Length: 219
Image (cartoon, rainbow, N blue to C red):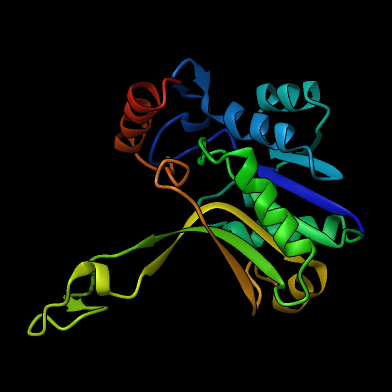
């Protein structure tokens, strides 16, 4: 059995200029996930897909492989499915494909290992992803999603709403080939803490991550 981890880290960012190079509690954003993957030490091969010479040099210093980002996959119209399918087609000989993101700086090595071990040892699941369980009152397009306002339940009695953290995805080769998607038909959902789930997409996210990491977790 062979496993591969792919970490897409592009140089450009539309919403937060230079996002992956921004310093978060004394460390550049892209360094966090690379260090956590290295600490987990579970993948046969780790690839960093980038269009940045700085990030490529850093990846090589960690003995990771480097993929030169295709220009069309550096555009904002490209998504995680596009990237993982491209990686599968380029490297078709792995049994499991994992995708982790630099925008999830606090995703811990233990969570990475838990997802990995559950997926590769399971006959029930064909894929996995990290998520949070949220108990609250949710609306979409002006309509309540998970409750009736006229019959107000206690939040702790409500069924949890599962939210992908976009931190980690994993899938077996057969399902990736069949569905061309990073989530298969029988995913294992690994619940992580709000801290690990922090995802950097805006300037506000960076400020929150800085505060939480520094004040609460002494990073």
